[in-house]
Length: 245
Image (tube, rainbow, N blue to C red; front, side, top):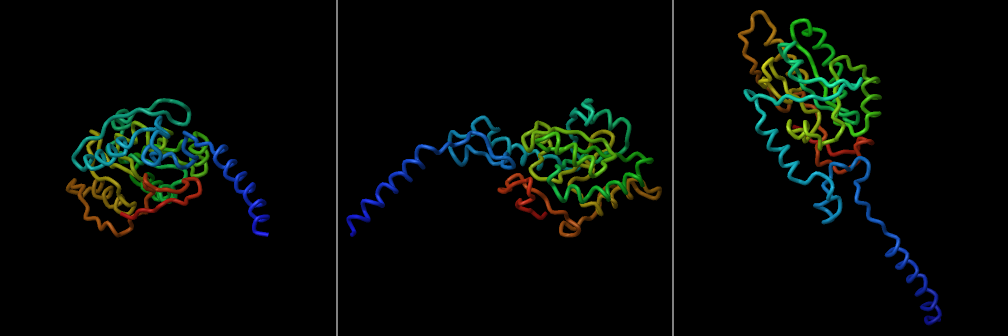
């Protein structure tokens, strides 16, 4: 009986092993939503065409260096109509600009839009403007989310996920990521929760203000959750690691 069973089981095992070993195809492209995972760190030699881990190190370094009092770099990106728009041109027309990096799959980014609209309505005539930079990968996602949320401010797209040149230069290793700058491109504040942003704008535009942009901010108060570059699950399903500042 045992001999009979061994004769029956052995071919099955052999077939399974041979089918598994011969039909496995290892893709050299990341799965949709996993583009931010550096494959070289997981499987050496796989995904070598992707930006190296050094680009992420550069993002962290740039984020640390871009602090209030420093000047942001100029950039030029297309809007939804395909027209190139530069930050420098926007700065010439406004006193204070919020540079907001976002993505269609980022819930906290979209949750801030209603407050942005309110602040823009309040201070837009006094020289406040917003420029949004989408880090989506697909133009369709950018377009659909922009229409759905009725974004009224300048809306540009880099569409290279975390690996875009502008995203790297601005230290975008999580979203929402933002910089509040003056007309010279000097950083006033960064990564402000919407209520803190409101306080800064009130300070800047109030007639009784002493022009001091510093605001005492409790990092635990009204801090939005952020989608981190090292999240390990799909962006599309919002199943990402949430990092709280």
